Length: 392
Image (tube, rainbow, N blue to C red):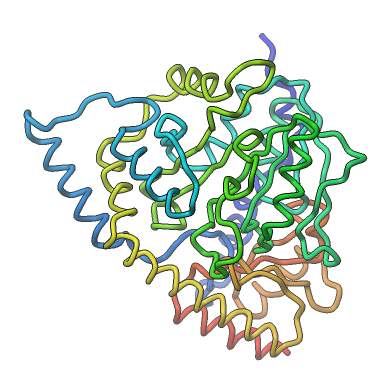
């Protein structure tokens, strides 16, 4: 038998696994040192009461014969799909519930969606960006080209008409940089995709962190996007579902390629390879979009954004260049004194016991940059910023 040789082309270690390995090695050598983690974007606030109550009720329902649920629809229960449609209607986006697919998280679907695309498609990926975009295409053996994010374009690259791409990844707010595309910038990407018959894979996992009401929170707020874009969203950061696992993917009926509906292809893929998200989790997800749920989650988002404000404020005091933090939980900073990303990682760990994420792990353009996350506990963020001040 033969293995998939493309897996051998991947980097030896997944970025976050390597970070964990280095931190654990440091802690083993320095057991008395308290390490503060501002790296991996895991939430620290628990599920909100509205979600917990809904899930507890769903558990009780599963214990009664009259309300017990077995296998559900692979694309998600109708009650949750319709709830998401209502959520989008408030963004002035009209969806059919058959365009919404419930998943166990955006990360899974971002990788799995590639099943419906031919191997010969050329993929355009921003650099720097979330590593999963690159790794899943390397695994498949597709040709990858990059849109360069730089200080000059505020890490928000725009399309180049001299480059032909078939599949385009966009992430807004961006992970890791925290940069957010405005309406005009997204219009240029939609125009490019329509002109070149490309498909945009739009990752909106952090859309609820956008504070500026003039900024789009969905690609479908851009005219024509329903003909060229698939949108992925997650409740992991929005509602603390990192351990509960639920998200959704939108594949419009108007999205046609080679005279074939991509919605139908995705439905066929899901009904074959995916058994759906548990009923209990979907009832919790439904509560996310209730009036109480949205208000409670808004308070959690405000907590994280205050953390981001504290981090950004400290970096300004220290004259460290950075973006993000205003409409995103991530702050992307330029490593001081021309340090490399991993050198700065080691420097912070050794001298301040603060952990962030090296920018080089997100792409070659991330070299010399560093990501800090606002998902920590307030007291830890305050302490970490005090430690950074003492380094100067």
